[in-house]
Length: 77
Image (cartoon, rainbow, N blue to C red; front, side, top):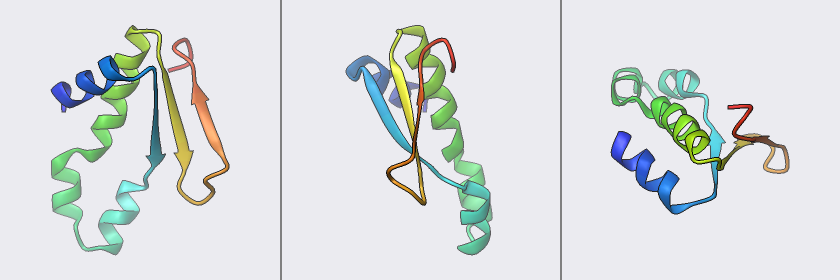
């Protein structure tokens, strides 16, 4: 995860990710162990601080409404 997030942060000035409800997804798909053990939510955290270090931007897109986006500047992350 650290290598992947570093590669993404190095390659792009703005990164957009979907705001996933991992807990709800795990319960509804009966994948609690696999989704929680793999640490999918950690990628968001890693991306946030690595992008912040470089003065780049993270955009989080609401899963229900693609028109609603939250922009995080380096000072807000």
